[in-house]
Image (cartoon, rainbow, N blue to C red; front, top):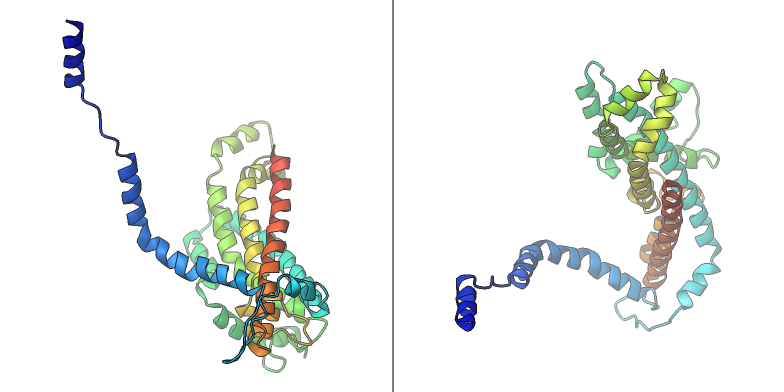
Length: 303
């Protein structure tokens, strides 16, 4: 009787077929159309660039490429032009990221208020984001023009903003701040709208003012958003190329030659593809190190 009952139970409740493997294969097949372009246009060039960094690849139809190991990295460490470009790049990236964040935070706080035409103002704030870097560069070249520029006309000066050694870098930093503000503002505004209003109502009962609410509620609630957007802004700024190329092409005298401009010149002006790839790999390592230290500090403070 026991054997017959066990068989009856197994017959009445059959096992469910395992579908995990099949579903995983189906999901992979559905993702392939999106993965193939990523592999071809992102991962492939990245791996090829890392490979070139360990070779002496040069331009030319009959040039022979050979493996040189870490020789390019040694040359890079002793290259004074690289260190000058790296210093300018760090000044640019840190200045634009910090000032851009402060300006965007102020604009986001303003757009978060119940103002008239708030929707229209939010649309206007996105205008620089919708413009290509080449168009932005050409527009600001007109603004900075020494003879017919709007800025000199307003200030009553005759400064050649993009060709003066003392003001060229600050001038392009201003353009970088203006260009990157929209996406930072949008992200911060989304974070502000996600802060529960009950928190502000609770501290208002205790008589908290505007500054106390900002320091006690707004900034702590925005911390994850701030860490994320400033990290992305730093990566985007250190890799900036098109905007600065249109504005100054690295001049005057290399005062605005960012690392990506230096790599471009080494690759396409002098034909040292392997050396230029080495610079790209070095910048990636530096960016990862800086971001790692920054994120570790933020997580330590948060914990």
